[in-house]
Image 1 (cartoon, rainbow, N blue to C red):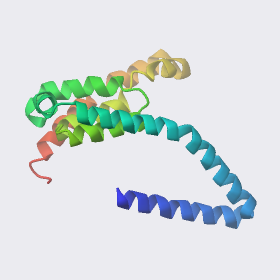
Image 2: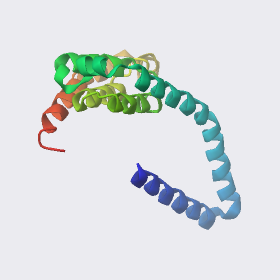
Image 3: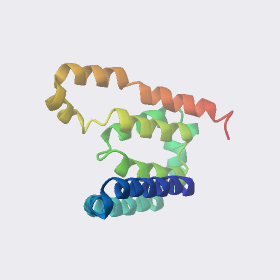
Image 4: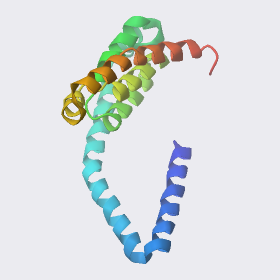
Length: 165
């Protein structure tokens, strides 16, 4: 997490420098205002999501997580994660803090990879938008070709844990 923050800080400073170079303080100010507007829209959602993730973490009994979502849960855990990921609204801003809370509660690597991959690839909340944007043919082809990938990714991650610590 610290490395990611450092990389992002370097990018911010670099892009701020490019703004100064290309347009002076006016362009830098415009970039800061645009970023601030985005932050004002996103911060309330993130606050709610992190509170939700915290409640999930403390309310989910570790025994239930171990039984249903650990690597020992096998294919059942992968299927639960597959469905939950596909139904998670909001994509990464909502799902990633939930995945982190599940990880801290004892969910298995395979389950977490399945959940995050399903959330990214399948998000059935997004399907109506896709239907309206590029029609049923491409939407059906995308979903049909992606539907098994989260399970494959989760099972592969579960197998790889024997080699990667």
